[in-house]
Length: 157
Image 1 (spheres, rainbow, N blue to C red):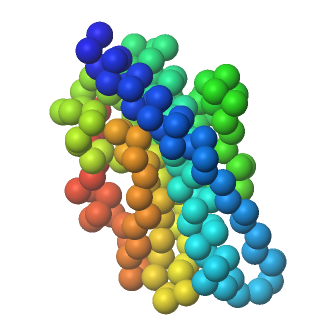
Image 2: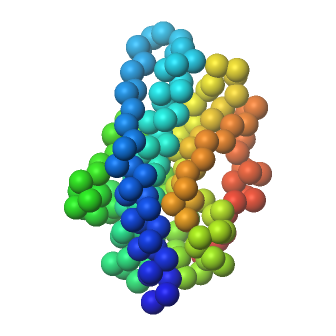
């Protein structure tokens, strides 16, 4: 019961932070993206990641604190909150299991979702991650190998 209250508070905070967020993602096909376009892509991915984290938390509230099997299961909860992801960014659920198995939902730094990677202007690869506490981060690596970083921030259910 205590965990549900933490999830509820996190969901409300995420909804408030998303209320004023907005972005305009526009990349011309066939051209090299500019720094500004890559920044817009990062912002768009972060916005969608926050929405999916909110959806995961709302879903978990109604399903014994268990994460959904796929992100489409979050959409009814996001529609109810009048928030939907852009549909232009691809994410996958990274953590499967119960929030009750996490050491502390608010401070654990455990990844629940991750985006596909893309190349930055400096040649690195970047991904967006959403965490169990609802915050989201952009992380880059010199190549497309995120395994070591992901291992540090993951927990098997």
